[in-house]
Amino acid sequence: MIVLGVIAVIALGLLLGFVIVQSAFSHRHWRHVIAEGDTPTLLAAVEEALETFRSLRPPRGMPPADWRGLQSAALVAADRDRCRVSVLAEPDIRVIGTERREIGPAESVGRRIAVRMAERLLYEIPLAHFAAVQVDVYTQYRSQDGAITTDCLLTTQLTRDRGAETEWDEQESAAILADWRTRERAPGAAVNPDEHAIIMPGPPPSEPPPDPPRSDTP
Image (cartoon, rainbow, N blue to C red; front, side, top):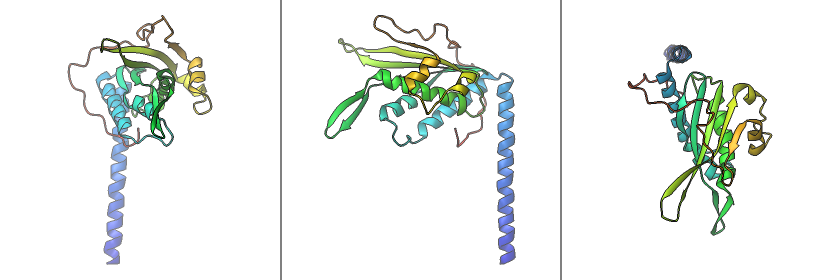
């Protein structure tokens, strides 16, 4: 019985080792494919990563409005070196006691979302290694006639080199954005995120790309 147990343990170890090696080779293959400029495969990898982010549980202490904003992330465009996404910010409204109170406006939520989303795009997208990213933050409100209007609150751009210099956990989001290429909405001055964008939206690929390998760690 002891011999059979040892054999079973060895067999299990060999199987796990084979799976790990296969996964490593698979990731290396897809990284090489994307590095060679296969945009459809890259887009599929980014979409898969965004979907993985949506399935995660919110970190302890993160405002619900921030988490909903991060989950709203939508891919605008991407290529081997650049990635652009949009997110939707709403006011930070929480229940305190028995009352609903606005803790912060959509602008404050949008700044925090922009910083966190940029960090994800630079460091948490499997298979991708972007040199620059852009995050466009929108908000929605209902006008007097009942129509829903969408406005761009801010757009920000960040290079990987600048990201390496950013004190992600030490500074307020407004101070971080001030060091990046950021434009925010002002009274009477709308923000056009397509102006000087790092990459413009393009048509969807005509053929579905191959599925990149799933990753449990975004």
